[in-house]
Image 1 (cartoon, one colour):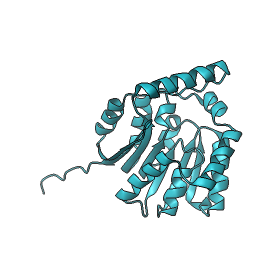
Image 2 (cartoon, rainbow, N blue to C red):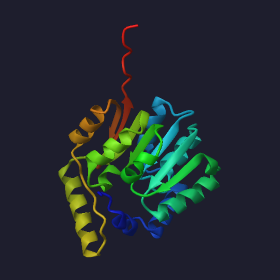
Image 3 (cartoon, rainbow, N blue to C red):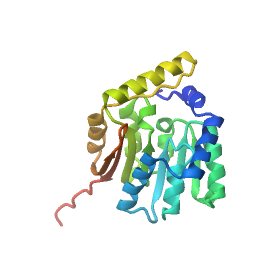
Image 4 (cartoon, rainbow, N blue to C red):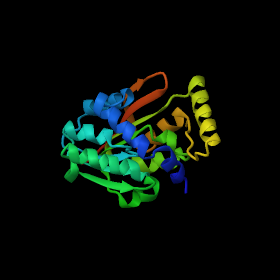
Length: 219
């Protein structure tokens, strides 16, 4: 099993979830999340179903439901994030439209239905086996797949390595990863997706892929 669930719980605890919620209510989505949302909304989200993998406090599906998506599935490894997302969903009137599942998505994948849109906002970098995670999540996307993950830059590698080192000193088992961008793109292309939009910040790559329609055979 590739999930580092104990590490997730130590990194994304009640205090972290509360801080995320306060920031979200005060400032709205973070910059990269906003770029992801813009890319998805440009492709059309009205009436869509959403699977938000590693959903945190649920910012992506809160915003997509407000933008016209029909329903969402929220999957996260930590109880703190799930509880916080449930509270915010109730406050926003989304309770009956969101299904919550706690655990490692790869382990749960067989029991989770496919949706129109799948999102992984700063999640691929939290999972050691990129291929396994991307394969499992891409198989659930009927139309769009949106992801935010780190760029392969020297400064980003140094930042991630330093963060992992400090967490190790503090006894925190969580580790972050920089997976090859080309390998992520190839994993999605091989599963029938093409890139529709790409935005980058100093640290992050924000990409929306669309499933390529299968050509109809001769009539």
